[in-house]
Length: 474
Image (cartoon, rainbow, N blue to C red; front, side):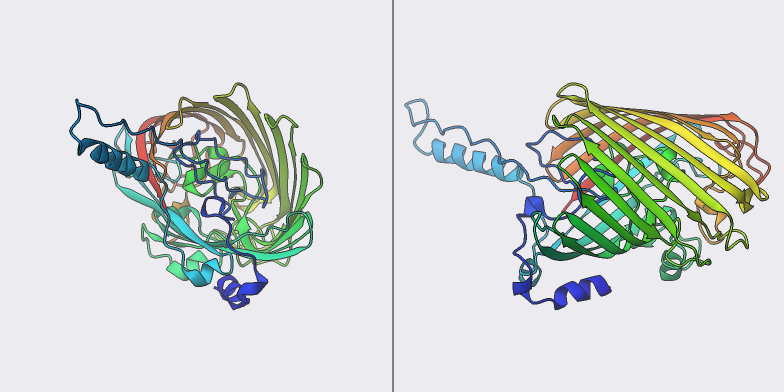
């Protein structure tokens, strides 16, 4: 907890007052009821960089309708009753937050979080109880509390001039921990004892800002792909193959961002490796990216890459050859309610020890159509193709000793998913996301784990899932 202790040790006068609660320097966008629900921002959109993005200031609710004047048709006592009812309705539509301790507010630190939980049903029940390579709603017919999330955030805001100091820390408890194990961190915190629930620390970092430059130092989210670890940022309960398997989600190191102009931002830094808090080699990976937004704010491009030598938990190969991956995210607001997102990832690794020291390649395309029906409802579609050319990337967390999850690996072929879902914002703090997802595989059978095919009990090349989750923010 050094980030929290450092921030709390600063005199209150050294830090500006806390921002308005709706603009909390929290990097996660929490949408209010009277706003249109936007698609999750690109992992490289906004400041600071990474999948955990900028906040939006909630709009004020529309003014209440006037109370009708008393008339012969209404008894004198009814107008106050109607007014009271209207007040209750307006209060019910207001977002609520955790009480903010005064000593945190003095230092501009925001406390908040959310609860994400749901259930998934597989159209073809199988004895393994897992939904193949689907993450992170991977359990068939079993309730999952995916994320019980708490954060402390003191965002950097220089206003474009001068110095500022901030930091951020996240804590999650839930079933998602199995997909967020960083070498030397979560394995030490939880132990690997086949437990379904555990604790994850996705981010804890200090951040320094000077004019239009900011620098993070610590453990933080990567800057590749479109989806994100925080549940409120994603249009679906389930994740794409591209985000789940082909990019570094969490890294430890240093990342700088320079806002060159209102349209262009550059990012560059180094890290210890993919999902590695501790690394068994002395090499540093490079992570860099560029973002561009059009003047009319209807089009954006984000390109990011990561390259460096890796360490492997599953084999004794602390200094295997270089792994390179890039991600291109293109977003276009086609009409006021309709947004299109294209994601293209490509990766290459030499001498991968998981496939006998051979070279490995993976690539794919991921398409999203996000349609805002009204402020409470949106309809979303995702169509993905992902090619694991050498069977090196699609491998379940269950391959790690002591982790209860899908154990498949070694599928050299094409993975597809078609997902259709709705987002219903029943309240500013409550979001329901039902979805239907069809996955299928075309390629070679695997000989690595006894699961020849990735679905069912290793005997099927496709599956149909029905899922729903609820996200409650606070």
